[in-house]
Image (cartoon, rainbow, N blue to C red; front, side, top):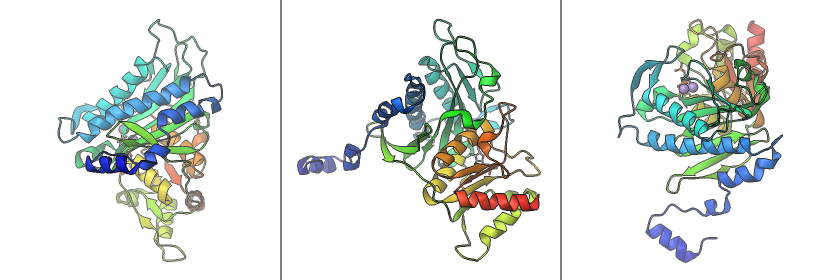
Length: 354
Ligand code: AHG
Ligand code: MN
Ligand code: MN
């Protein structure tokens, strides 16, 4: 407990000190405590999460200054998927990649913003690290210029190729069920890092005054049912019939319906809200985007792992996202993710209309 005198001084000097934080563990402490629960633990995975924590703080600092410094707006280039890169996309990409490379803890990195994967060799030119990281360094980048929450998504796999050799594409094209860790950072009203290593989902909130993440959302869980559906309804006429039918079902006045519609346009933010409040996120195929928009390796797999670890579900409309065998790095898939019963109901409509 904080003494009355300290509490008075904190309030008087406007220090941001919370009793909750005194009781709660920091992310650094949590990582150390849980290190031994990882399969084949050698500390390497812990060091990766630690690096992501550091990079997240650096990006957070920049995101918070957007508007004050010359960091908003387009960078003038397109990524391999033909999307305009924003300055913050490029900046966040460099920060995460450099942080992971400098610490010599991964053998390869795949990023939404890079055409090809990066092979990471140690300073002695060795290839002895065991993990690859895949990431969407800045998710929802079209929201930056208008001061709406953006995020970072990451996914970690153990390499398939032998330690000591350079990574190959095989190490990146693994189904989501092989993930050993996944998480996201949300740069929102507060900045949070949420992640799983396959033993539940925990959320940590950054205290910006001291630059420390504290465990604020232990053991996050989706409710089985929810009342929010999140989809870009502007694409309605292009949706498959099953999705159109499901939307009408959400809007029907019956039982606990109509559901409410909420769509930010940043997957991380829409997912985060739905996990806390109960809901479903959908990015189906459209006639304009016949494979959907979201990327299997950088967005769908990591979110699916988190969703399942939180008791939710993630599907491509017909089957489990994490069982899809990827065939290419920047592959897109339709994505239905959220409260278990809602995803199952959407799948029912998809099957019926097939
Ligand atoms: P990114 O900024 O990494 O390219 O991702 C944007 C994604 C995702 O965050 C969001 O849910 C979706 O695109 C929104 O797409 P629409 O604008 O088509 O609704
Ligand atoms: Mn994204
Ligand atoms: Mn992105």
